[in-house]
Length: 123
Image (tube, rainbow, N blue to C red; front, side, top):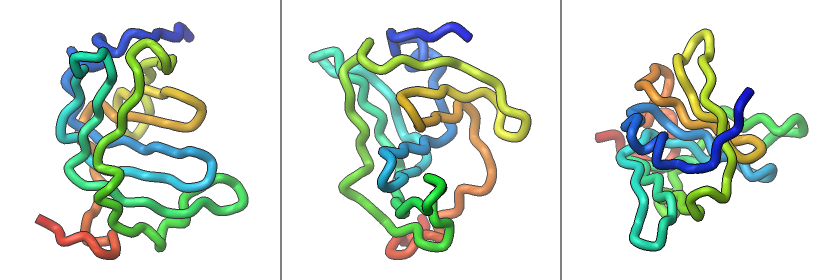
């Protein structure tokens, strides 16, 4: 497993999947709208919509408690500050694992249903 740091490689892959961001207290997920670098070399992951859920005692999101979280539609961190590795999953294709508990799927995957998110109007 080779860890990398420069997110330009990920941006060039033009991800079309979604992100699962887990800070140990809650999880946030949503489909990727865009990923880019700003003029300060920060990675910007813009989501089409974001939903959050608390974690159970094992660190797994409580699946029936996803709620819309528009304030979390943008994930920002300095480029080269968060290591990542590109892997292939059996059921969701290629993904990028980064930080301690975060994952970004490169291809569109099924199962991300905005209709299951409280407070989110599906478009």
